[in-house]
Image (cartoon, rainbow, N blue to C red):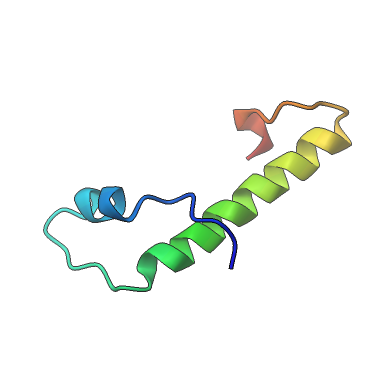
Length: 56
């Protein structure tokens, strides 16, 4: 498993009034890591070393 970039306590805080399944943060983390990887790939393809909002 990759490093956690999602803060579980912040996820619970944002889901105000809702219960959060114990494995939700792990799934969300996988999605975020995928977004970051795609952004990195797009920036590299455009010969940049900085990811930017437009890479999402």
